[in-house]
Image (cartoon, rainbow, N blue to C red; front, side):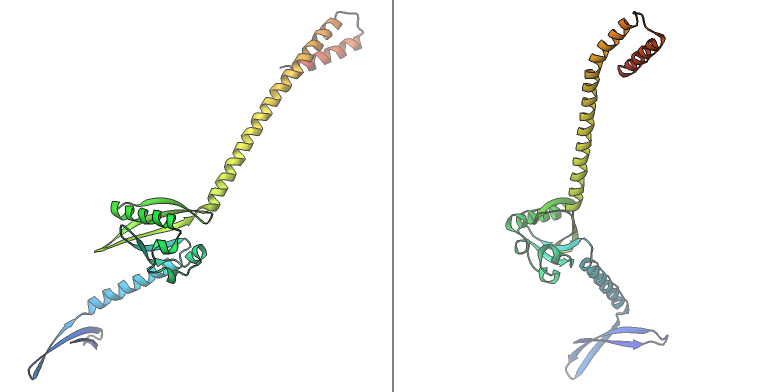
Length: 231
């Protein structure tokens, strides 16, 4: 049998002592060892685990950890916001496979992608569509002894893609409008130049006739204006 006690040492600090006992006939043999350092490491690990759990639960993006095999991926942790995507609380996702959470085709693709990530040991970016929304996931393997684990996060890219599409359409519309304007101006230039050339020839002939000074001034003004329009 074994048990642990906490004792206060001469220096005033508390030490954790582990006792192990074994009966031998009418006697009981006991051994003790100081496990304070181990207890402190365990406390740090426990605190880190709690912080990680809180981060995953309250992450602003979808965050997950899975245990992966060639034929299934099973949820170990999931952020609370998955309830918005799936209508299932994160605590109810724990232990469930992708097939239990997503449509068969998407679940099969996810499971295969997960296995490819842990098999290759590489970080992968994966795009997925679900319920009319577009998601981008970043997945990466987590070395964990004999267990094959994978972690990652998923971002809803739907609004970003809509904004990019809107920008593309606006750019296309602006380019089309500019092209139409250029074609219009080119056509108008041609349509205006033809009658202006005839008008200018008539004015040049008119200048060879007897004109009053006022008429000559008006004729010169019209010819000058025509020249500016045909440049």
